[in-house]
Image 1 (cartoon, one colour):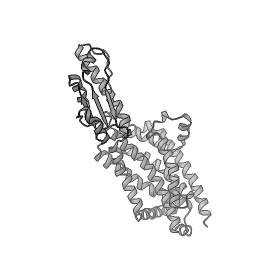
Image 2 (spheres, helix red, strand yellow):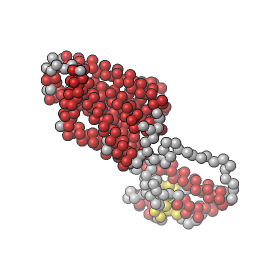
Image 3 (cartoon, one colour):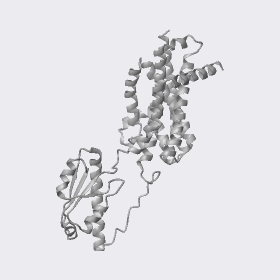
Image 4 (cartoon, one colour):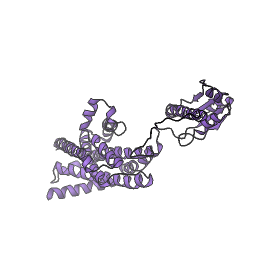
Length: 374
């Protein structure tokens, strides 16, 4: 009972200390509001409202059909220009794409010849240029093939591919971006807050005060862990319910309670990791450098942004020891596919094992660090 009483009151002390740290409060608010909203709405990985100009010297039904094939949200409505304006507008940065349809294009297509179209691309806009070229080729090819089939009244293919996208039928990148950002920020804040809490104790000289009190290293560490877990867990629930479900209107398929339970287990592991980093670093700048070495591999190799199946076997095996790998897997299964406990229990069990090991290891390191201060 005495240990539980000490852990409770030391944790309350941590919450009060965090409440007096405006920088950390701003970081928490930003990570669970603006960062998630930006990740969901910026969607830099896809083509979005790319400006395109058309030089139509054919003035035929086919050229008009090709022009009508470019529309939002991938492209802005095409601007009709003449050949003399094409280079000038691209030099001025007004167009990312300029498609030149030569005279006699429809006639040559129907005659069975292979006329060429000219596509000018502003490659300084690298992401749009790289992706958009494929979009333009697919649109032009599709419109030409459909026009030729309709003109010659040739029967369509007896077998057609019917595409049905599960879990995200609109293929909306905002749904994926918002949830992935939330998952990443949960890990980041858990490590940052606990590591910073320990560094703050050392910089303010309050560690010595704790050592003079009748409390154990286990109680001190447990207090920091549960206090920071509570903060991140509440912020996660708010972001998921208010921002992702409410403002961004992202449908969440699975149980919010099961996800928060998995989040709590993940936080147990990552807050323990934050304590360990806090014992290694001697100052806030050192902690910041350590975070780069830890957070980047965890985020890039956990399967959140890149499927684990595309990684080398040795990387996948090593990353099984990281809590992120299992948390990303269970989060995507619950939030995207509506999975229940019967599906994600292996990931939950892995988080319990990894969290217990990290807590024991960090506690041993924490005891050793406190021993050098006495």
